[in-house]
Amino acid sequence: MTAPRHIPTSSKRGVTRRQLLRTAPAAALLALASPGARAAAIRPRRKIPYGAAVALDDLRGDPRLGAALAGTCSQIVPVSELKWSELRPAPGQFAFEKADALAGFAADNGLAMRGHTLVWYAALPDWTKEIDSEAAAERALREHIETVVSRYRGRIRSWDVVNEVIPDEAHQPTDRRPSLWSRYLGERYIPLAFRIAAEADPKAQLVLNDYDIEFGDPRCRRKRAAFRHLIRQLQDADVPIHAVGLQCHLHGEMAVDRAGLESFVAELHGNGLKCLVTELDVMDQHLPAPVQRRDALVAAQVGELLAAVTAPGPLDALLTWGISDRYSWIPYAAPRADKRPNRPLPLDREFQRKPFMDVIDQFTGREA
Ligand code: XIL
Image 1 (tube, rainbow, N blue to C red):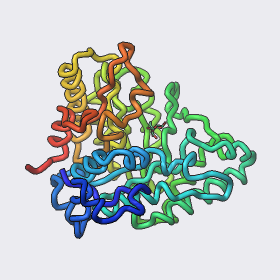
Image 2: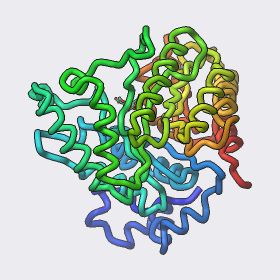
Image 3: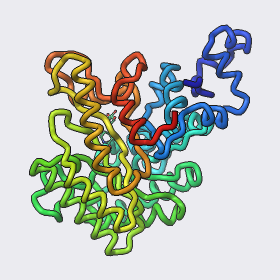
Image 4: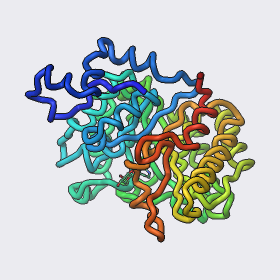
């Protein structure tokens, strides 16, 4: 593992070089003359890019996190720093500091950064409740996408343009999730968002992202059917959509629908779309407690998933939603009844590899 360059912390300010050199990680940090190239040279090469989501506060608070990302991944994605809730303190205002700090960390370490997410029903600041007409909604959407995408043009090459459009209970393939955007714009906010993003950065990869597409139970099958319907609708209307993101927040106790998922991804490829796994982790709250057994089940399920989605052709990228169990949303989203710590990610709380990481290495074609 290589030491990361430039973890954007304010605590380094006013510290002398001598003081910095007293700690081993800091010494390694200064020793990286050409950090991006160096980190890229040291970390494993893979046929499929592997990345992880990271929150700036966690990165600032724990040097092991930056080291793990720089030494293992070739891309990162901000957990929340590009969501409206973080970026948009008030109408017409943009607060780019946190997203810029993550972009800086990525650039300094030769990592790509994905963009998550331009349009979502959730994580909207309170002031968006003042949006009360079709014209105001379109204006706000356009201003946001144009400003954010243009700012990171050439730096963020892949955007989750619209996130989680399909409702959890999709009774019809035409069902879409209600949101602020659909209330005032109807379904046209979806093609509109893609078109504005394409104008702002014609070279960016524009992605439609969703979850619970991966399983074979009736609810997920219906969700997948609605997702498929939406993708076809967009392609039929010549909307600039380039890839589909499968979040893959896996339910540990459920069986991945290998055949159904494989044919879904094959159809994407057949229609000229790329496929990304964007937010992989495993909700292990219903799995048995013993750690070895649990880790083995998690790894086996990830193997099932990746076998299905890579069978039709290579993924464009594979990202986990965090890299270490220490920094994950799963303890909040899916806590265990027995109060034992969740183990949803490839590294444990002490940044030690788990079998999950072996599966990632296998399916991303990691070279020795
Ligand atoms: C989650 C973050 O991980 C949490 O920290 C936050 O409180 C809520 O959002 N699907 C998505 C992500 O697209 O943006 C979500 O991230 C997880 C589910």
